[in-house]
Image (cartoon, rainbow, N blue to C red; front, side, top):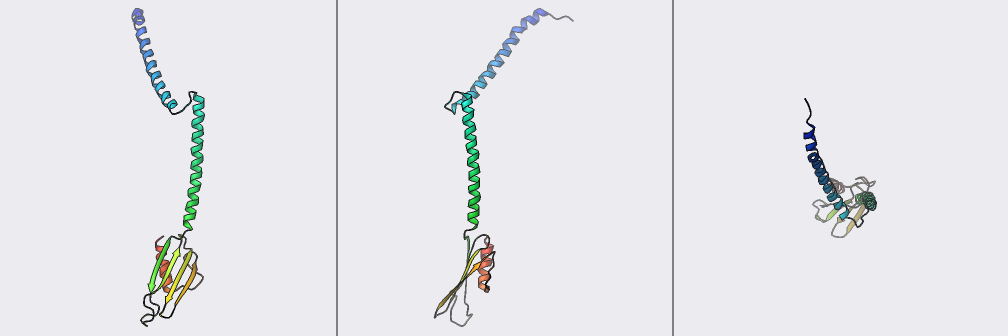
Length: 158
């Protein structure tokens, strides 16, 4: 089998033309992509542009770090705020006709059960108010039934 060199020589310019057209299309596509990159910057120097993008990326990373730390501090501060309030109304004299349901216990706590329970005992002659500090949903002072109920209601809201 012999190679017809005249036929090979005949097709070489067409093959070369095809490779040249492919190279032209690829260079046009690359030119369009580079144009898009440079359109966003005021610089015609690619080194300056890359430095600008690097600086912008570093700024975003620094901002993200700061924002994350700030969110953590907000989360910590929010946990310390009074969020749960519960009121229980009651009659401490149960049928003696002295107070009615004007007495109450209010529990004001944060997420961790720290806060205060305030109890008001109302009669016709006077009103007494008591406050007991809460830590971890409990108190070092003896709690009444209504106070425990108010604390339990606050705890159920967490």
